[in-house]
Amino acid sequence: ETGVTQSPTHLIKTRGQQVTLRCSSQSGHNTVSWYQQALGQGPQFIFQYYREEENGRGNFPPRFSGLQFPNYSSELNVNALELDDSALYLCASSLAGGRTGELFFGEGSRLTVL
Amino acid sequence: AQSVAQPEDQVKVAEGNPLTVKCTYSVSGNPYLFWYVQYPNRGLQFLLKYITGDNLVKGSYGFEAEFNKSQTSFHLKKPSALVSDSALYFCAVRDLNTNAGKSTFGDGTTLTVKP
Image (cartoon, rainbow over all chains, first blue to last red; front, side):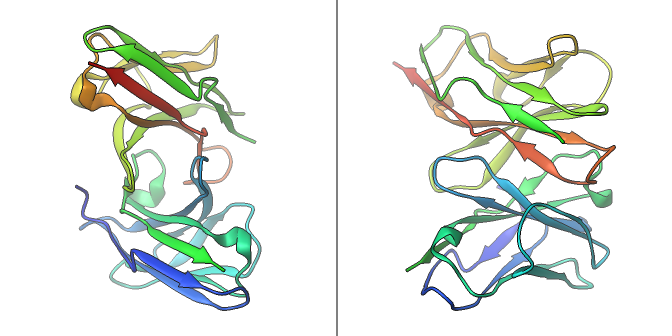
């Protein structure tokens, strides 16, 4: 078990709605990254936050946005939900901008878009 | 660009036999390589990593992996498989010359260990 916690664990939304997912990082970790894991696929990098700033982004549209707070917790916001956004969203924390260390993952938030 | 290929969707072995889960990668700079395991409806758990140094790295639960630069591979191995090793395994690569912090994952290999 890692110290990374995510909420909610499951949620159902309809197309066009907005969703906010939350993540508390492991104690002492100052870097949080978010991944989308579609069914049967590996996690896809959405973005990373280090010292409250986005410092890396994958191939996701601007309707995917995030925040990191002074206590290093983080939010992922997705606007104008589409059916293809249905996936497991994983938060991972790490040290030092995530440059060399392993990622510590939470259990994920499973989003279903109807 | 960086990428990871796990050529086998499934690997099946008998308990007590050695296991290998294959991974090849592509990066423009020096690779940092990782293996993670995922149990059903759970997040990923770190197993081991290669950063630099000895090409054979040892990790959790008796797993090890061998970095081969010429073949751009990082295969996961275990000398004697357990039924409890049955899970989904992901290889990941990170290239510090590009997007800092971005890990690229393969699509995973389902390992089934039969009693």
